[in-house]
Image (cartoon, rainbow over all chains, first blue to last red):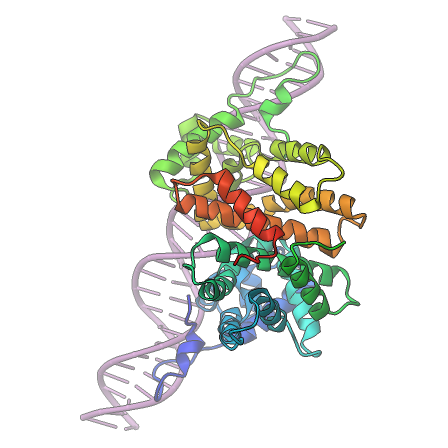
Amino acid sequence: MTATPSDRQRMGTTRRGRRPSTSPVHLEGVAFELFGSKGFDATTVDDIAKAAGIGRRTFFRYFDSKNDVVWGNFSEHLGYMREQFAQCPADQPLMDAVRTVVVDFNRFDPDEVPWHRRRMELILRTPALQAHSTLRYASWRQVVAEFAAHRLGVPEDSLVPQALAYTALGAALAAYEHWLANPGENLTDIMDSAMRDLANGFRVE
Amino acid sequence: MTATPSDRQRMGTTRRGRRPSTSPVHLEGVAFELFGSKGFDATTVDDIAKAAGIGRRTFFRYFDSKNDVVWGNFSEHLGYMREQFAQCPADQPLMDAVRTVVVDFNRFDPDEVPWHRRRMELILRTPALQAHSTLRYASWRQVVAEFAAHRLGVPEDSLVPQALAYTALGAALAAYEHWLANPGENLTDIMDSAMRDLANGFRVE
DNA sequence: AACATAATGACACCGAGTGTCAATTGGGAA
DNA sequence: TTCCCAATTGACACTCGGTGTCATTATGTT
């Protein structure tokens, strides 16, 4: 599902028909409340629907699955990352560009950080979500692979850009796990460090 | 679940009680047959159980989930990889050792290759399995991270070994996808190439 | 023959996700 | 205002994966 009821609400001119009774953002808030108190697995879709005052069936018109709730508007963010890649100077070395854009993509305002941390704790520490996120990562990788393929003048599905995208994702995930385990440290610094290790081929000594 | 009924069969001395009516290997064969003809999603656990002549409940005593069927004896293979790391000469550069062991871990006898290809096609192209495999990859990464941490003299959960393990996994997965998309090519060569790209920090030009 | 042990399968239950369809709620036109 | 149309909603029924429970069955031991 790409268009929720509340998405279709604001069409070109005026709208017809019954108004949506909620929004993805609202549902996300309600769900996170429950996930925080009862845990992800113990929270049923019925719980969320009841707390949001909607029917269970309606929940699935806003999100394809319970898993998808935690991902917010990730797809839109991806568009932003693609733009950032497009704006990289042509003479910037490939891995410098990748590092810069990936680090920037994971930069957040200080007031957003606690919220983002809870989201990533859910995603990276809940097995069901850990598994499901693989599917989201695919589109993230695709953005990186497109850029790398364009820079290298090779097809997008050839080995090097795909491996580069896969490994960049790996470095980013390792950075996130380190960040979650070390709340005092700065995500941007960790991410930058991991991406530099990658660009250095892990010649760290 | 780590011990299936047929695992517990051969204990120290003689065994008691009813004999297991099947084995993980047999069930795997039956399941693959069905996956091949009907597809993974369209094959229900009931189908597998019925085809194997056992009860549905019994199936779940041999595998924790329908997803787990495709992974065979992956855990035992991991032990082998750990041994290979332990046998690496101490003066071998870190990334050379990682590349060598990872490439070797994914080497198969020619007669096993078709079977392995079907298995990896399932794992990498079925969304449900793609998601679930993330959980298996965690233990793979742990083996790599342990070795890297030991070599670098840092804790296993610190950033560099974790990032290295994550990226090595990424390179391996990219190699597998390329192999599946290009049946004519050799997995070992592709894997070696991807691991070299990683060790070179993707300075490919 | 009686007993302990291990595996099995039947049954009931839960939760995620989907298809269907009548009912509701709004805007636009007559 | 009233009628019509369109979008959303929620109730219901269903499938499937997965789990807890327990009586039953098959085996080796005493």
